[in-house]
Length: 199
Ligand SMILES: [Zn+2]
Image 1 (cartoon, protein in one colour):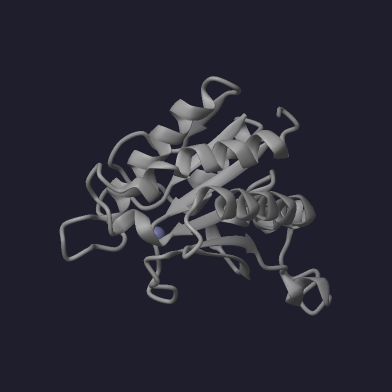
Image 2 (image 1 turned 135 degrees about the horizontal axis):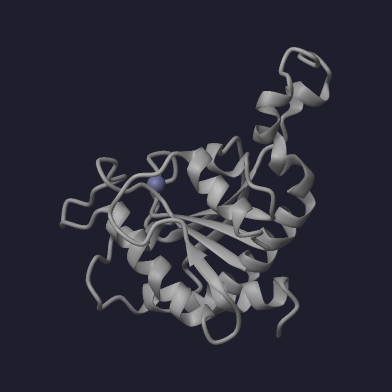
């Protein structure tokens, strides 16, 4: 089971492009296309299939309840990485302060779920690497693909290999006509097949 998480939704539109594209809509469209592409090979669900908001905890909860084998959160660029010709794959950064023991004991079991992702770091990095090599094959050579670590909120509660993907060209092409963006579902699907051992 692959859980695809279209970022934002409802009142939270995400980034807006001056030409009219809006992130919450662009990522939902891609999520549906990806689910359609995956449908031939294995099951997937979306955390949201319409225009409404979800908290990071709700998104993680849907993945955990579905016993996700992989969780992919889709976004269409950030202020920090505004390059339209880039795809950045984020894995959650280690909770280093916790591992150091500095706060051990202060944060009790009630909050333990927020460290779910810590057990999947190696697998999440493997998923990120497979996605990166798939994007490199499917995308034109001038698309810059990179893997980064960041303290991504939505990933921390997920009990599965999990990544967040920022796709720069998604927002710049709100219409149908962008050939680069059209290859994205295939690229995701190929990496996921390899990750889940179904190729
Ligand atoms: Zn976003």
